[in-house]
Length: 231
Length: 342
Image (cartoon, rainbow over the protein chains, first blue to last red):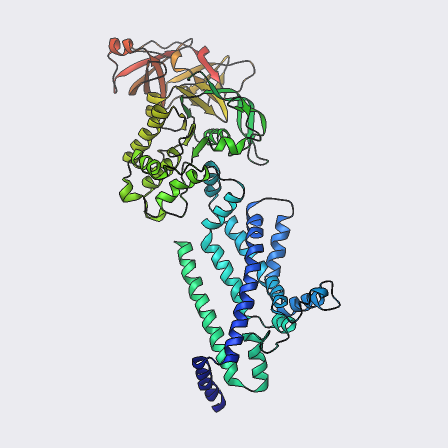
């Protein structure tokens, strides 16, 4: 029991002093998740809008498929992406394995279904009068899509934060695709896994506290946005 | 200006998805610069007609011309000129000012935007200093309706399509909405097409009235529609009213007898009660409303006859001669042959 309490106090010292290694791990995590979210939003928002707005053959199937992918195991994503970006894989020439960009591809596949499914649901659930109003005021094409997304901005933000929560907390694909290389691809979750294995609870707990703080901030934001969306 | 045909419809049919036909217009012309009323019972196709004219719903069959050109393929251009106000308007989740500015920005008409927005707000009775920066969720139903109308008026539309604009608002808001619509017509020559149950207002301001029933045009003006049950009796169909009076209608050889339409001009009115006869309908009713019909210059007299309202179109001189007034008991006389079947 003492080693947990000691570890906790050492963790506080680490957070307060923010030593170089801890700072690097936090920065790598933020860089990775930022890159992943950029890809997730650039691809997910238009695809989610299209899935929610248009009626086309196979729409129900795609919706079911997207919702199934919400529960995609992280290690399966890691395995698939590994196969594609390893030296023997079709994208081996780009040398993405054990890089932050390679890890971002895995996280993109994890977060994309969340943003697509939630955005589609938000667009589909929008007041049907919105479309008529925008059309009759003269909107069309991209302006129609952008205004619709803006009208559903609270729900879209909820979708984005949910996706961010998923990718910042995952360890499977980050470990497989990043290799947990110190000063390079070591993220909060992979570092906690390693340090716990080594018996260094202090760094593990310190990183765990930072991760929980980020998750807590996300949850507070989600609750606030849900209330705004419902008002 | 008034004679230029703006819309022309020929054999236009519309249905929602694979559903039944909701609109079946054989022929209709709408001139530029007029005020058109669209009336009919709920479900008669008023909203659908307005949405088709606003290019918000595609026609399924037939020809629809706008300004002499087929609307197909020109929807985006037409929507920039013909704007539609929903019965329950939707406001964008932004301030009143931004709601009105949205359409102007889309048209890149931003040079004197603030003036236009403020003028349109004043036009609907909203003080810009008080309302311009107000968010969408801090408006009452009547205020939201007026902001939505202001957003259309600011665009200086060529056509303003209003779908029951006064149905869900209080009396003062309704009056302001009506005044704003009429001012757009008077000041800018906007063609106003309005679906409403506010017949008194419509008879006063409209240049033409389109009467719809089950998606079809059954007349132009204040037609009387008498729904069933009609009973077949020999060569006549008979509608028994709640007070025991009966309306006789001559049965056609092929038509059904579900509902009948009677032109108000075919109904004569007098204070002297008429003897009943099988060859002529002579009904006794109580005058409930009298309205000057702008398009004809006649007076529309509505009378309660056995629980239904029948309208008679009479010259002003007859009103004076017969001393017609609300609550007066009068005889409504018309031939069974003037009853047409829908």
